[in-house]
Image (tube, rainbow, N blue to C red; front, top):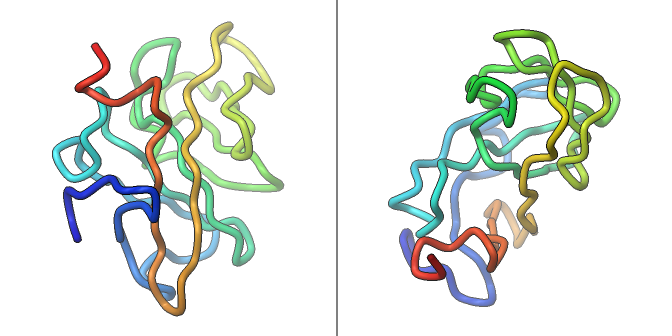
Length: 120
């Protein structure tokens, strides 16, 4: 299934692979997107955003996750995990969000159509 961004999404991890309060990096070649995707676990709820911070392209997958946000490790800007909106500066532009679903033990990401590499 990896690399097949069908309507059901791409299996990117299993329940238990992402510790609470952390994220993992999914390479763009797996999802067919223009940016790598970061998948986060916030108290058992999973979220996916473009990995590159809109401010200085810091890796959000390495960021601190808490209370529905992720903090970029470069300049501590925060983004909402649900929709990628900016919660605190220095970023001024949101990052794209992607749909996450859980199917049994599979964590699936359905890429945001606007962020598919084929859409460029």
